[in-house]
Image (cartoon, rainbow, N blue to C red):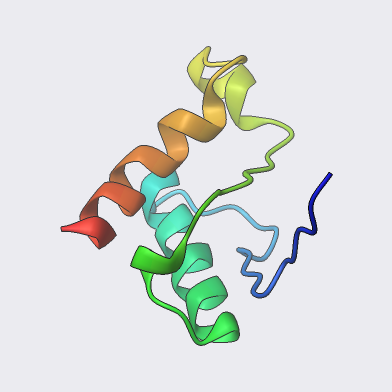
Length: 78
């Protein structure tokens, strides 16, 4: 067993965002978490994603975190 630390968090306020994509919402949370932790995307070792309803909308029940985080994390890593 090893120690694990959560050093930064970010989230998008619960609301309807009809004009924003899931990737854009994740990007906002990612930017907040990095700022909160005073880190860069290169320092990230793991990402946890939580969403209770998006899988029902896009029929991506088992991989919604991977789908939602792919574009923002990829863009940040360039």
